Image (tube, each protein chain N blue to C red):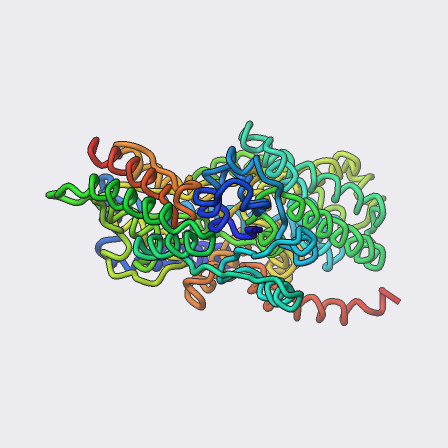
Length: 326
Length: 247
């Protein structure tokens, strides 16, 4: 309970800061007036059309990635499982890039999130197929490397073949992720899919708790493992697909957040799901704020910051599980 | 004579005598960058590669100062005379480049006539504007043009004020969208989007800018006529004057 309160508190503080701080250099009073009372003047446009959607997207994307990481780790009972590292985000980015470059995304607004979802879905299915229900670390990581590499290469290829002179340089965005200049257009594209994904994943709390006792024990307690697996796959694909479609592939959120929060919730997957959703939102908001404070004019990529924080965690986890890997 | 730069392509096509010009750059065929696509169809295209240009056996190659220095160096070593034209950042530079092209082609009188026509056309726009509306030049990746640019001069000629330089943002380059919106320009002039899609260009249609445009008399795009310093810039000026009068 105390954890949830402090996470909500952190979320509130960071969200407020995120809306207050920006290159336009508005005063505190101006930002509040523009946000709540404004009528079409410049400050209102800045607050309502630029800063607010960016902060909201940070929360949505963070919550989706944190939740997906926690659910995946809970199901595979493997702390190394994370959508970004095993190529799910990368595959979602590939789906998004394909519909953007073929013009489908411009013709039909649902094409972008659905293609990203399809990419994510294909990757999750492939991973689960290869790693099996127990999710051995070695196959998980090897399969993840292969899928990540392939998705990254194909994304680069599609962008290089684009007739658009800016496209090729945007490989970085799709692989590292960024929230700069996102708008409510992107919030509306992502939100429906994220809500579906959240409700699917959050419904898995009890089955995941029971699954910690093992597949057979869970079956005797009335958990339909096939159904759990299906909901998990769809939930992760929805969350990661929607997040990647609008913000690019942001890695490590789903790895670091559950890892930090696990000791506080007593290793119960069900409470970790909620906590990781909140924690993911806090983490991405903080990272996006840091990106703007460190290099305000340069659109530093979120994934860069996340990797700097996340990679040491990942290495530490590999070190801890290396006995199993051998 | 072979031209391997979009801007020299146009001046050469405008001034060259029959048979003088034997090839223009492939960019002259791109309707997004070249206002003379139809005219360019009369000439074979070149891709600005030394070997290809040399094989055309030109007496002289026309290039820009920013054309690939290796290609130009190689052509010169092969004994080809390469004339480089500076970038036109204002209308004086346009006049100078027209005269220079006339000289290179041996068509001085045609060049002088073109400059005279340019000046006469330009003078026709320069009516006194009591209140100059501000215009924001906004390109992909939130780039904007400062005061040492052709786009800035086009705005001025059309009786508009460049919103960014007016606000003291003189460096051309990327400016955060927030700061651009705060300028509340009377007109947003957007860069043109290329085919395919890119995140860089997505920002051209950001809702914050859409709100700004809703209050405007007309949408304006920077197109092929904005790219090079040729008499075509006057068409861009004329369109802006039109929009300004409706404001």
